[in-house]
Length: 197
Image 1: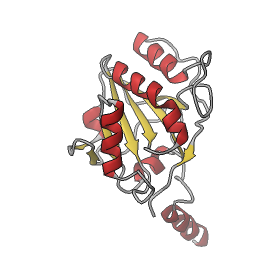
Image 2: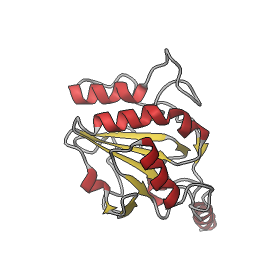
Image 3: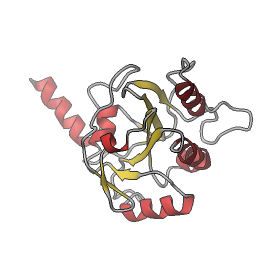
C-alpha cells in the first residue's frame, strides 16, 4: 500500500512518466481525450487517425533539440499528412514553462508552417500514458493503431547531420509501402517533458 501511495505521489509530481510505456505492437491510447488545437478546435486522436497510420510527436516550443529538428519534423509532417498518415504534434509541457503556453504554440505553428494539428495535453496525461519523456519523442502507429516505431526523428542528437539517417522517414516510407520497418525502436534524445503537477 505504501508503495502504491508513493507511486501516486511521484506520478502526480511528474517524477515518473507512467507505470509502463508503450512498446512495439501495443495499441494507441487516449484516443478519445479531447485536446485544444492551435486553431481553437477541440480534437481527439481518433478523429485524426490516418488511413495508413498515425504519427504522434511530443514536442514543445523552446527546447533546443526541437528547434534543431524543427525543419525536418515539419517537412515530414506536411509531406506525410498528404500520404494517408494522420500527423499530430502534442505539447505536454506545463504552460508555465517560458514560451510553452497556447499563445507560444500558435506562434510556433504559424511561423513554421504546420499543416497538421498542434494540440495541448492539458494534464500531461497523454504523454504519461504513451511513456513519452523527451521533446521530441515520436510514436508511429499503423492503420490498425498498433505501434510500429518509437523514439527519435533521426541521427544527430541535437541537430540533424548531413549524412545522418532519418529513422522516422524510413519507418514512414516502409509503413506506406507495406514493408517491414528495419529499425523499430531508437532512443529519443531531447529536453525532458516538463510534466504538469
